[in-house]
Length: 65
Image (cartoon, rainbow, N blue to C red; front, side):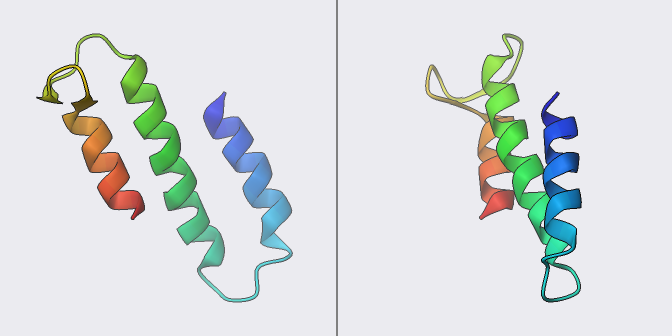
């Protein structure tokens, strides 16, 4: 569902993008945000800091930044 929303947002943003590559960067940011949220819902992940953040969430946040 998240990927469908990202796709729709990118298609709407595509015509307003001022520079080449903006849509790609927007995709990376939105995908990373969604991935960080979805990984928080999983129960079988490796914890970086127990009870606070998972390894995959931390990686997603770092890649978004």
